[in-house]
Length: 446
Ligand code: FES
Ligand code: FE
Image (cartoon, rainbow, N blue to C red; front, side, top):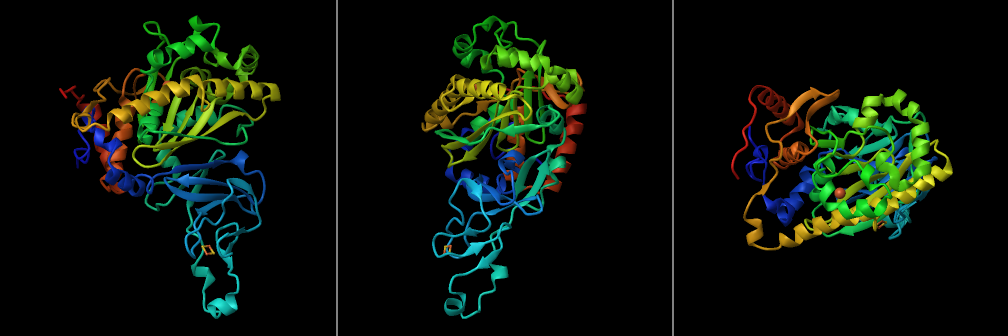
């Protein structure tokens, strides 16, 4: 079954611009894409003890993520079942119970309704509290990262990750004692569709030498050592699978792209590289580090830099929630160096971040034009040149200067938008894989 036609011929790299602007498509996305995918909720380090909680979003739905008494993590819709107020209005903290600030209904750490003020007089003892708890989220943990979904249909998280686990593990399995998120979330709003940001993080290394040329020159006193320059960029690959994407140029040694965090950090990184090589292998440490997206909207950059969620806020806006992540066992001065490096590059006012945001807002602005939404956009780079399981990298991949992961991202998006069940999606993926193996596609005219 072909389902991509409604939004352009994505298999052939055609993208219909209305997927970035149309309100009705956006409403459908919230239900079909955000309602039926695994979404990042929180990391272990944000929930240190019983009752620790953070508030986040699944699409536009506010949810509370809470550490339980038994150490597990549960999540529920942050919506009081009485009149729909947020049950908890704090961003984060520690609680024994959550009490709604409107009329005082109280919920326990699992989201069960446990107290209704003046229950005897107001409800004549007739309310069944067990039926009016908060709506629960299905939660799974992967190496300290908690993901949630509203769907019972979506496969278990490790199946959902598929080959992307190899690329995610390059970060989450890098250090003996794991990672932690630096406390506090940076949040900002960009006037662009969420897919520009998420797709770019899955796929787009092509913009780096061009869009970030001046930032690269300004940020390091060794720009000549920077790996991404026109013409002489080292080899690199891009992975695509299950809508996820990962891309990197290959480093001759650890540390080069981390110069903006300072020489102390690079020296520390090099002096601890044996630990990294032991955990994830030298090849993977040097080949897998740059930009990544777990479909639909969780992305990270670099081995010790930034993770973020692209929360959708209507077709023309995205709210970025971003964290700096650091090796848990790194000395404090190194953690501070990494944090400063991220602020300089991918903080809200970072040189690279603002380069990216400007591109996306400009495109969104152009798409206000009627005529600008009539022609398909081109995502054909590298079409038909994908390979499987090459260069020690599992799954489907292509040269890093390709849009294989972008096409994979939009194909999965279109599958979900068409309402395919996850069983149908699996069948379709298997058919595509056979087709890719037997019949290389031809690049067609737009
Ligand atoms: Fe929460 Fe009324 S809306 S108690
Ligand atoms: Fe960029």
